[in-house]
Image 1 (spheres, helix red, strand yellow):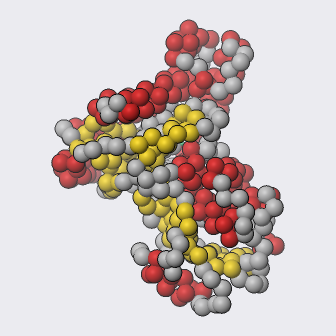
Image 2 (spheres, protein in one colour; image 1 turned 90 degrees about the vertical axis):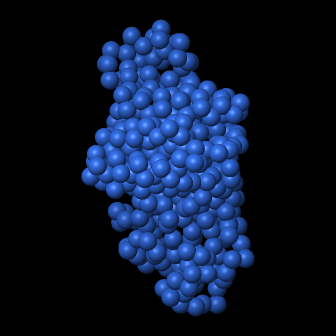
Image 3 (cartoon, protein in one colour; image 1 turned 180 degrees about the horizontal axis):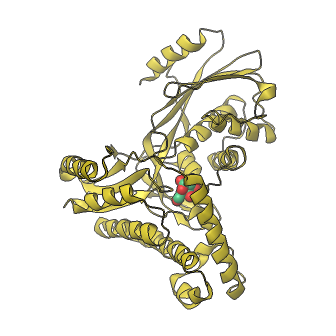
Length: 392
Ligand code: GLA
């Protein structure tokens, strides 16, 4: 939908007013490698997508905050004095959580606003539609109210909204990628210190293909939190051996080999092994990428999937089938699940001459084997959050 079309919808919904509307945008993200490492203080390697959430926002004078979306039916009109007092269980909890955090920072949106969101990211697909809504909201209000629009701070504020208001204990990766992405670059982010570098993701004749299993992610929050506490348990045990260890991902694979037997629970030991090995894999992946060795990068993607399936156990049949079918296509260099898991999307690196065949054959085999219809997006890496200036 063009900005002009979106603006027409905005006027249809809220009518004309003397106030100026402005337009903001934040993308979704795909994680290329480094899964379930952000809350373990490790390295992740995500990239911003070239589609996301657009927000048109216009001030009101009566203190009401009005929420609507072009793609979700729920709407709300809430007096600012009531914002954040009770959760709705609806998508508006994401922007409301951000408003609560903005108020804590001394930037209340108390004058009132009309908001229209337009989301292009399929919900529940693991491509961070929620982080995209949070970050676009935070950036828009800080811009409008003359606050600090440092995108690292906005990522942190958005994560706090998700952790504290929405109640999902996610790490920093999604909000960080959505806020700081850059066209044709992936972000190598150290999640403990938030030091990061933009690494050119130059893939020549290879394309990133995202496959949506369309498997709704059931129980993802509770299983996610369970993984987090298993990692905490492993860390507490390893800390007895290495008191200076503050995050699981700090441990090198060789050191883990020596100490792993001190973790008595076999499941917890496997979770820890995934974290330690996946962290090393991210660093190795970035090295081979710098040398343009896409073939090896693809093999690391495959290894990452195996580890998430067998050690961390966050994959599911649908993801495994899609990855397996993707890997059968000759032009596929690598394929893995991306994001939290338990459903959602895969990401594959596929030769451009084979993309059509990939979509057809993986799609058919996936449908035959699971009964579900997958969807595929050939994606480019886009920019992080921004204002779309002069568009309306
Ligand atoms: C979800 C979370 C992220 C991260 C990934 C797994 O997307 O929101 O913080 O933990 O899962 O890598």
